[in-house]
Length: 171
View 1 (cartoon, helix red, strand yellow):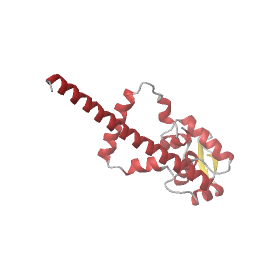
View 2 (cartoon, rainbow, N blue to C red; view 1 turned 90 degrees about the vertical axis):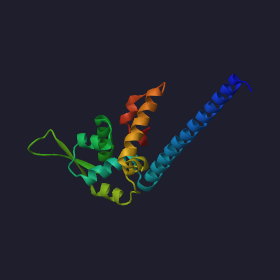
View 3 (cartoon, one colour; view 1 turned 135 degrees about the horizontal axis):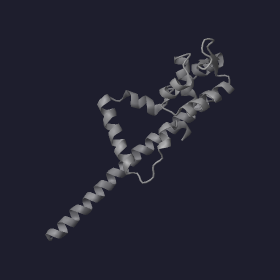
View 4 (cartoon, rainbow, N blue to C red; view 1 turned 30 degrees about the vertical axis):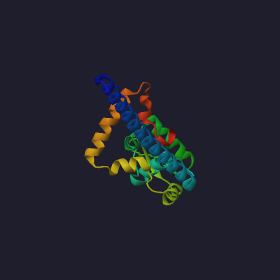
């Protein structure tokens, strides 16, 4: 075998290894997304609310009196998205809005009895399996994962940054 043939053979083997590694990572993403979807379906079957509605309700129940801006921050979503979640939860009588007498501009959110009943039968983790798993990763691993995912998204030929503020249950 010539030197050039060996180099070409090693190059082809390296490309095959890289493809195998990429496909293994792709399978991990599929596993994550399928697991997330399955959890959201289970949540909806058990409670009658979507995963994002349940997480919002859980945040409001854990911090009664929070406002929409605080809810958006807690869920890492856009404020408009949080407002839409609040509207749906109010319509279903799971939460109520309340304005304080001293400042009518600030609307506080509180769970209703019906909302508390939903929370009582909600399967864990209420925030979803992915946020729960991320919160349980060691800090250094979480930082490394964030860096690697940033690098991955920079290489994607089509990117939609608006997805950063959309609940996974709504994607």
